[in-house]
Amino acid sequence: MYFTEEHESFRKSFRDFLQKEVVPHIEKWEETGTIDRFIWEKFGEMGYFGLNQPEEYGGLNLDLFYTVIFLEELQRINSGGFAAAMWAHAYLAMTHLNKEGDDRIKKAYLTPSIDGKMIGCLCITEPFGGSDVAGMRTTAVKEGDNYVLNGSKTFITNGVYSDYLIVAAKTNPEDKHRGMSIFLVDRETKGVSATKLNKLGWRASDTGEIAFDNVVIPKENLMGEEGKGFPYIMQHFALERLIMGVNAHARAEYAVEYALEYMNEREAFGKKINEFQALRHKIAEMASKVDMCKEYNYSITKRLNDGIYVVKEASMSKLLSTKIADEVIYDALQLLGGYGYMEDYELARMFRDSRLGPIGGGTSEILKEIIAKMVIDKKEYKPAT
Image (cartoon, rainbow, N blue to C red; front, side, top):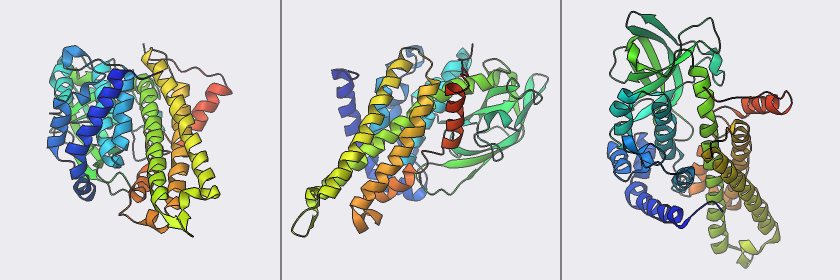
């Protein structure tokens, strides 16, 4: 219904690429928390960062189901951190470059990003703000032909080693929602500093806390219109939340497959453990949950690809898919018994990496309130104009 032969051919080639070029390095990157630059360029050479980007800047302008395959296959190599580094670059930072950047910005930053020669990060969350985007304190004060940026951001994926930062800041602090703007900040700009954070999971990615101390930004680095930052962010949250939902169903599906392989080999009381009714029924329940998430996410992808504004559906996807992924991976680990608790088996890392799902990109608690506003209060969220 959703995938053509071309999609499946891409899936196979991308899966082969990951096994050959990425998997041999994952353990090192998980240990060091640093992904070597060469792999970004290899992704760029293969066109993987340009799947949904315009052809005039080096992209392939493909439908969103190529993106779904990109996300699903990244989850199967069992490094949530590596996957996050790739998709945060391609679908958070680069989305803003494409949608709000002018031609100069796109040529200078979007094309090298597609080529894997530059790495980007998106800076929205703040130490005192969390999911309260409108309550951010970082400011960008206009002075002549420049803006002066002051403040801090935290939990930023690619926040330490990226080459540029897409930063949300208040240009009019008096206006909570209409006073926010988006800026492009080069990493080498004076006054930008970053500290790497030590995380429970996503160990391969560099998650940073970033400080801006009187950072001078030329006015041409304002992206889109001044004061439109909040609706820009909200508009792109639909894609980010769908991405988180797809990631969740993909890792949960992999967890089920992994548990099934183990159950087919493990014996207890003279028979394979996949013959015990209690465990068989557990797997049936897990597989059913995953399949429901997957089908829902595919339908949302189809609507988003057709230009429909899916903020409600994407929020629902992230809320339930991440919750179900945590439940399924918890159960999959249990099915392995003591081995599931060992780092030598993949479920231990998967268990840790999955826990960020209900937190990143808007916590489940915030999403419930957003969904409640739409369902109960009939609030309508509209795309930026």
